[in-house]
Image (cartoon, rainbow, N blue to C red):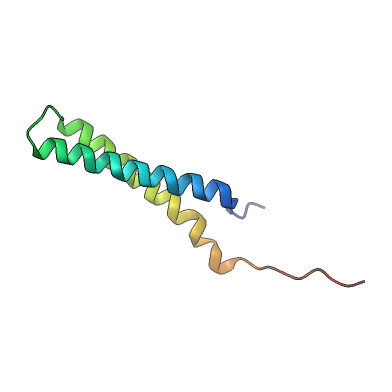
Length: 75
């Protein structure tokens, strides 16, 4: 039975990758706005990366409300 849960380190890696992708996307958009050689395809590719990372980030957090932590039994 898969719970879909990830470790804290996996979550933090995904979160870092998401932040990096956002910054790369922002830099690409700024280059485009300045009229440099940034192509629309590059921007669309970065947007797709950001959307994918956003979806990956939502997945672990959606499991938190159903998580249950039981204390060890004495015995």
